[in-house]
Amino acid sequence: MRRIPLIVLSLGALLTVSLYWQGSASAQDPQMNTPLAPTDAPGGEMCWGNWWFGRRVAGISLSNWTLEEVNGEELPEEYWLRGTSGATFTSDGTAMITSSGDFNGLAGDGFPGFYTATHGAWERTGPREMMVKRLVMAFSAGPEPTEGTLLMVARTTVLLEYNSDFTEYEGTWLGEYFAPEQMCGPGFEGRPVTPGTTDPPLYGTAGGEFWGTMLEVNP
Image (cartoon, rainbow, N blue to C red; front, side, top):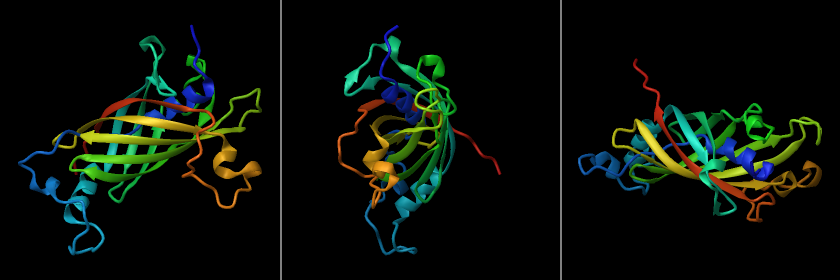
């Protein structure tokens, strides 16, 4: 079986797991058609539509994901990676995701390694849409380099769309895989660190799809 570069695929699969979005806006739902621009509504910074959106997306979801392309080239389906993840989104724009690939979960696919939980932030981009930016670190499973060595820092951009009642979502993700020194500086002595670097990612890119369902909470 052909192997795709470990650095790109293993982190990519892990990063892909988690985000969500729902379908097109409904003409019957004026709250979701509220403009994105700030207003003079109570609270100042965020208009009613953004506040309502945050309340709807807040919660926990379970999702499936695929890794389907590397460096802009689509892979034959037999080489896709698949997994699942759980994601927590807050109403004020933060996120945390745990993936089935985190704890050496991709070793069976030929890509051993350990990954941190994904930390992210989201921004509303449409009536039922958001963009999420996420960061995750990947570590060696050994023996070379030594187990625990930081291999890379991955930055992922996710575009999400929800269905009309915010119970299901689907979207796409694109991960960029950077050598640690690209964001943190040689020897972690960068001043300042640069998570938003515009340098080309040393280990390339990978992307795919994800889809999932929110966990219903009954008070």
